[in-house]
Image 1: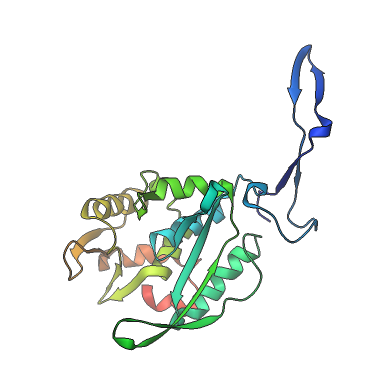
Image 2 (image 1 turned 30 degrees about the vertical axis):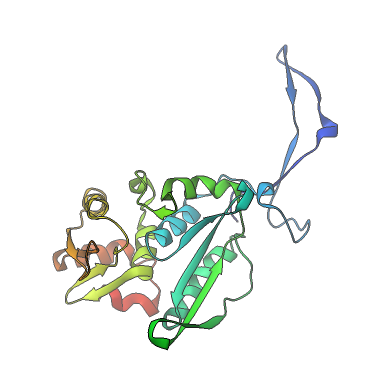
Length: 246
């Protein structure tokens, strides 16, 4: 179970309390665990943190890839959307299970839908969203500037082995004997920052390479580091995605 719950401000319990001869005025808040059934629908302001490191790792690893954070109108909170091509449906089902069993989204299994893309072609996609949380607002604030997703300066803190595995499964591709991370939407300096973290934190050797379009770049993890990479992320990689690190 996650470390967050629902809170209710019981203002009729507002009164003076004396503690160690210090007079303070308190609002009484109850934190109710998620497995305590008190209803089905809550507003974003009723969901609070803190959130444990596993859920933050899942969110940050996903945001490095194709996921995006959406701050709701009126500032009631932020929700995270996870997206994959239909060919990776087993991965999105696994990711949904990780998040739903921790109480962060609906238990309903994501449905594969069709989308018309450039050229009139049809692509299968699958997506799902977390509930809205005011305690996710800080995530949106550090990841987005003027609506554009940026690498936050604190990414080194939250790029755990689990987050790295999520990033690879979400946006990684096997290239020759190495691994490519599709960082096309990030700037060159942001990619340099990421490979510095990969080296400092995990001792992985990587380089920034052109992605084939103007001002687009990918991160390539060298074949010399693949055995170390496998050791780091192997406990978290699902069988359907293991081909990316072989």
